[in-house]
Length: 428
Image (tube, rainbow, N blue to C red; front, side, top):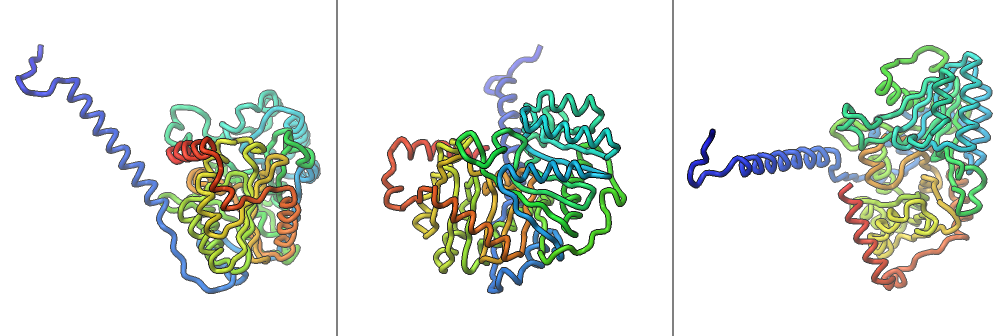
């Protein structure tokens, strides 16, 4: 039997010290990883945004694809187009989403995918395990029908190191020739036209042209990770001709140890904008760098406007309260903020300088910028930018614009919620 010497620490004390050391080391490792992926981004540029497409794509490790056609789709019209494309599929259907809940919409989608699978079309379905945990019979029917369904990062010991990394992309690629990208989830609330608190307003695009290869590549990234399958050939990557005049690039990559492409893209366009920055986003929690970039833009004469859902209309009011914590900085810096009260405003879009716009799955927060797998399209097209600006102005008619003086006088309980939930958000 061992004997503790006089004045020497006991075994429980040694164990506590060892555990404390492990915690400190792990904390340093996590801090180091985040530090290397989150450096201060600096840019010095006087060029117009319309001339910077090669730079935007190159710095986000993408390619500019010329010669595309882009169609903007609002609310439930997105699903009408989606089902049309799936029904017309002849070779392959690749579908990826974050959130899928059993219901009318999910049942229709399962039926459509199973019908194409039985017709000999190669169907691949990728759903985030966390967002798909309420798929219910939809998942069971797809599997029983022989349709390949994979859940991304399910709760399992082998995924303990990556479970926080969610697949937040929403996309469809059919026959490698047409793609759809946006913020739409497979939940019944996304049907309709965003007319009430039970519905959701959202935007997506249908793409034709060479850019479809890049969207297919984004789908393959997580499909290969989760299945190991490499799909090749003309049924998935066919030759694609020019079909229009729109230039598009994709930001989706998360290089190991480097800032993710979606974060670089969002920061870049804020810093080089000259006329307008109009943003609609449901979860708007910019970090201090982005706050400074937005305020700097406003101070140099850029018309900066941000639209978010009101706390009452949001599906995550805690997130809205966390966002409120820094609204005073934005308002003081000249940024105009609008709150949309009618329903959940879920579209994730930016219109910059009337010539360039972004649309995709990315929220304006650190989870999207640093952790999730996302996809954002950068589009140089005056027509699409004009459409997004018109939608902003239409939605603004139903909004409440926040004023700096009134915001400063909001109640003590409101302020306490803002600060408490912001602090909680920061440690997630």
